[in-house]
Amino acid sequence: MMIKLFYEISNFDFLKKKSFFIKEICILLNNEGMYIGNINYIFCHDDFLLYMNQKYLKKNFYTDVLAFNYSVNRHISGDVFISVDRVYENSKEWNQFFLSELKRVMIHAVLHFLGYDDHNHMDKKLMKKKEDFYLNLFQF
Image 1 (cartoon, rainbow, N blue to C red):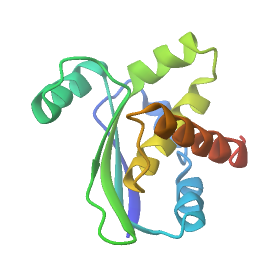
Image 2 (image 1 turned 180 degrees about the vertical axis):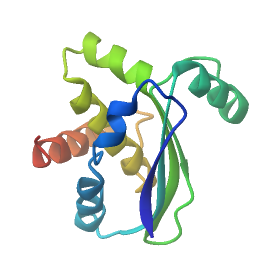
Image 3 (image 1 turned 30 degrees about the vertical axis):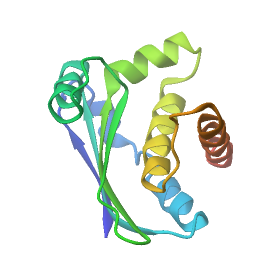
Image 4 (image 1 turned 120 degrees about the vertical axis):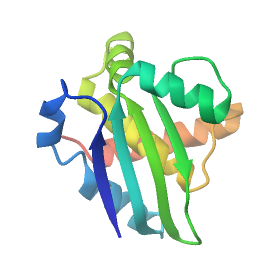
């Protein structure tokens, strides 16, 4: 079981040199009492993620992340598509470092795999609290 990284984009080669917090994702899962199945992170451009959003979720808007959960019992698996363009724009908008915002999105997707949701106010609040906890735990 493992975490793999894939790139739909070539002009973000600098990302390939980073571990992308794989160790931190493993710690997160362990802390939540779960096991690593197969998690794939696919880094792409806005247009590719828009296409995925339209095709699979029937939604016609840009987003920073799409997560497809294939977990079985306590073994967490899934595909996480991340728009590097959108993460970059969000980092500027919210005055965050790019890698910090990228880490947040990566954590956010895994939290969805664990059953956390963000469709109502209380769920969003809990998910944000979990994101902040792990971001603080995994300081650069």
